[in-house]
Length: 195
Length: 195
Image (cartoon, rainbow over all chains, first blue to last red; front, side, top):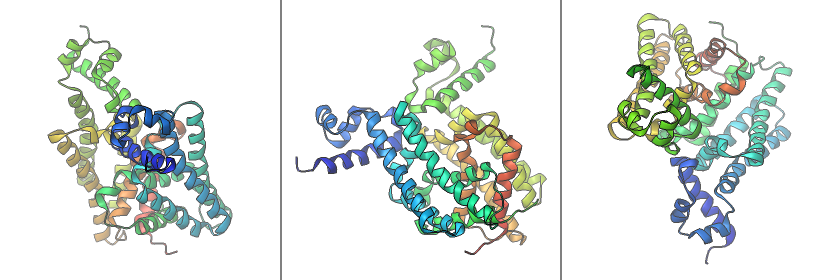
């Protein structure tokens, strides 16, 4: 085999992500993945231990990356407003560069079971906590108004939903969208408009 | 049969929505729907012509309702800010009252094909156009700033993503969340925060 084990596994992850993102994890069988990758059942199982394990490896990779970089931004950027821009740009650039993987990460994670589900749920929560921590910090510093938890859910939803429409638009760059969204998050956090 | 044809069809729609929302349209077979509903294949096909037709009937119903009520709000409420509150409340109350159906409506609509897909795509677009029209109207009246198309996509994403987390939170009422979201949409539309 000309392709190394690591590179082959990356290839399997990529192709499986496309299949899971397009047709849903539950509707895609291991045989179909093997066919798309060009490997028989035995060769495929040399690289993956199960379909769920493959899903887990895809989901964990991207959410872990977002959590790590989010924690870094807490350490490196003390200004909550500027940190919202950092978080926004990293999230949008991750979604832009890995649309299938992130779609799987956000939409198919619920297909995981047991300990794998727990690990991924905790990572998703850790990621949301980074945003919440940043809004609460701005609140303590008196630069943000107290945002209800539901508002923070709404802000994250604005980002997370974007994997569903990003492709069809495609005219704006990741950075442009990130900055528009960050500005919206900050206008929600900074001002209180009565009706 | 004690249940009328219409009521039975509503029951089938409800049970199928729950299955499609939980496990995905593609992963649920007609046999499984029949079993959940308590009808054999023949009896089920008396009420539905195909699985895709059943999906279509669920999706169309809720998005059509949103479009109709959105158009009514354009006719009845000339103030764009107040109309955002009306649109917001109707959308959140629809999501709250029909979580499975709306999940299917927004997440599984892409499984439709041909003419059915076109009808639903057009309805989704018509619904987004109602929001866009309202923001643009406020812009013309000088009360909103010019919002980039991507910002409107973001605002709608905030709403549409909520079907994924609404159940776990469950403490806020539909009206409370709707008003928090409307306020956020208006703060994005009304103010421009530089960094």
